[in-house]
Length: 336
Ligand code: AHM
Ligand code: MG
Image (cartoon, rainbow, N blue to C red; front, side):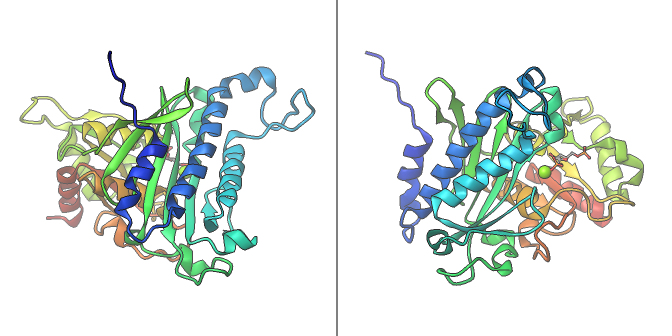
């Protein structure tokens, strides 16, 4: 008889609990609640195209309820799920200017804080292109039993406990790390489970894909321009230029480069001097995953995970991907 061996995400999390001798199952419970919300969002994303038939955002649906934009819906679903977990004392999301603190008794005792972009790349929703959810989890520094405090949310990325993303693409995948390598799970919608499909992901040390919005080229720093020129010249090994691939959805662009090898760049420009992407819930989690997979993430001169945040929505230039490519770019930026 043929035997099928499937490892579901829940099973995997339980197996890995042994990696954290100090853990009492709180992180596992937290991830479990996050994943339930991700599945709800998966369902909603898959139906997004029907919105035009059923009533578009801002209009009322057949029950007379107002239709929510998908990013607002995502924000609400994740916030509710994280509060329900009782393990999170507060969170920051791209949708909310202020820090959200959960002030019920259970959550005030929660050990973790959560930072997330509930639906990244949301401008791609209308055109049926991949979008994602990105998150990072830290242990709080303020005492348990009290409300979360601003300093809980201003820790360097190197103190992250776990990070991950969900990509809603041709299939829905969750990729995450707790600092012991990177694992990828594909959602099997027929059984409603994320199943281990990509164990111990390693990013190729070198790739031939570069991903950048070249529309801003004339405003890029000289080192980045030099690197782009390098990519456009013939690679001696393949005798053709590097391949340019840019979706405009960070999770999808990074995910492709993670598996195939390549570099993603979102530099500062003459007019946007700190870049576009947010350190806390876009760059930090992607950087943690990149490093855990053997890759690298930098702001051009410094390791992303060493940056000390000054505000929760702060932006940073961002370069991440295959180690050798990021190192070469850094050399060109430093003018070496
Ligand atoms: P968003 O958080 O408003 O969705 O913006 C973030 C997105 C990233 O997913 C993507 O890498 C980048 O913005 C694309 O920006 P641009 O359109 O300037 O190339
Ligand atoms: Mg975003």
